[in-house]
Image (cartoon, rainbow, N blue to C red; front, side, top):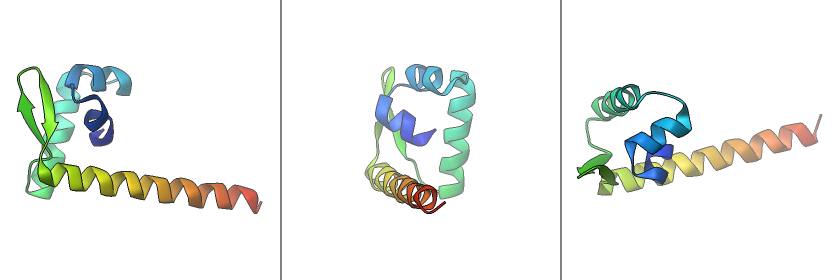
Length: 79
């Protein structure tokens, strides 16, 4: 959810893409930020913007997802 919101920078569009309500997405992000003890996003009128910590975290999420995808492709090639 955080990666999609980081791509869209808009709760409504991100929620639509994820097929959840805006309220549910806001709750998910708030719960994640509470667990992390820092904010990933800062509000900007009707949109959001990544905090400095958020930029670092989203980059790490993307790298982790890319590594997972590579491992899955390798696994499929060896079956």
